[in-house]
Length: 149
Image 1 (cartoon, helix red, strand yellow):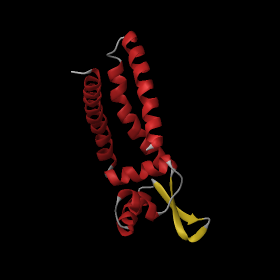
Image 2 (cartoon, helix red, strand yellow):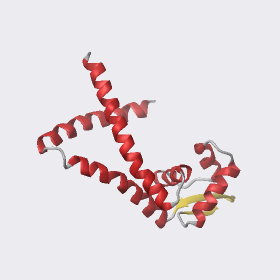
Image 3 (tube, helix red, strand yellow):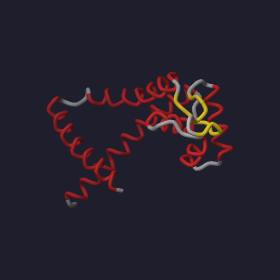
Image 4 (tube, one colour):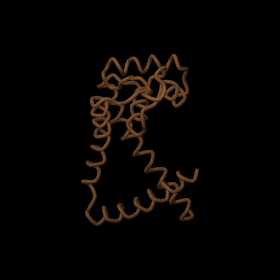
């Protein structure tokens, strides 16, 4: 097996294990908070981006404006997002994450981190140094590749 093939297989194996554990933890968080994947994606969009409108959420999720509006209504009722007038167009509404929404989402992020923290306690300090160096190189390369795509 070539080193490139072995590298790709090892990376694929790690990705599958990481995603399975990470998503399981996050799914438990979603269920405990009564959130759907579409609702969580909406919260992440507002967490990582600027305020936006209903149609932008619909486009991101690949659903109609009516469907995204229903989803947003539920998040407003839960107090996770706020719908206000858009200052540049008073007819349009803009969506923002509330403090409660940010807190809830960060709890979900933390639920995924717990598994990684448990994993790292199983590694020796020497192995951690090696993994840190390798992941730093991989992360930097992936970030550059993502920017170019």
